[in-house]
Image (cartoon, rainbow over all chains, first blue to last red; front, side, top):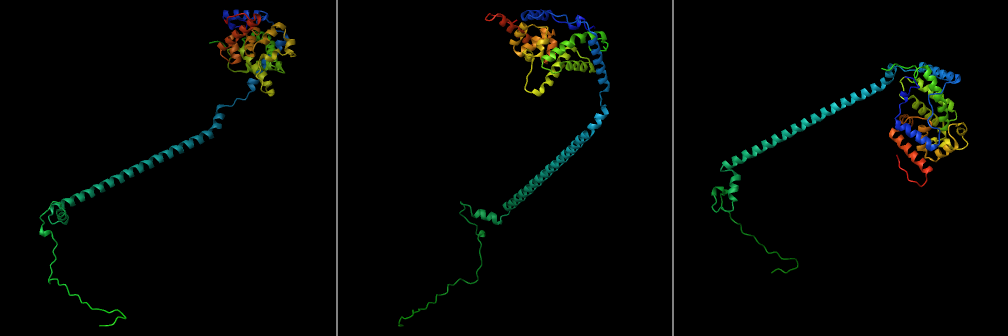
Length: 184
Length: 169
């Protein structure tokens, strides 16, 4: 498509009308012919010179190859990968330690529970035994301490046999005079 | 598929023709942005355009945008200058002397517009660029360009008919 082709600079009719209107308001020259300028030899020479300069810059501009950029980024990538793997490892270790602690706590809890149950079982069996044994001191004590029990079992009394009857010896008394008091 | 052109404007003849048309306008455009060496900037813009490996959809807009950027970059040491075409209209600039397109009355009317509207209006009317090209140059949506142009039109109507009612179309 040519530079001067109107299709290159398609513009809606309303925009063109607005431009004309504004030009009138300003008192500026109406529309200018933007594509009717004939290039002078000086301008053509300058254009060619600039084009050559652009070509020169395009060909001399140093382009860094992709592998060079990759090589430059490699240490950084390695460092990131190392830190990431170390972090993952630490996380795994922490998870394992947590799991072990959890298991130990569960085992301790189970042991405590079984010990409590065995203690309860022992006390329960002891109480059962006491209940079944009529000579059990506990049972006797319970029967004796009953508030409503009027008849006591004599077997329940603790009797100590005595060979000699108890005698209370007579009291020996003696009068003692105090110092300085005449004797009778 | 479109065959690859030797230049962004087509063949060599088209390129010469486009260069003859665009180069003076780009020099003038760069000077309006306060560039010290607008010829160098315009030439650099052409070289950058032709140096590109990938084709440019709107070469004219690309050239204007490049000249605008290079001109503003050249003036950057002066800092804190949100430059637009406002500097163009200041008296004493060479642009006035070299501007044979616009007379004093037009310049006065343009100067009364806000810089944002003036820039869009200038590119649309004086440079003859399309809405799409202006949007590409200024890096703004096409709808914004249209809004700016219509508001500039309303301001111009206000100048011509002060106190009169107008309808923003």
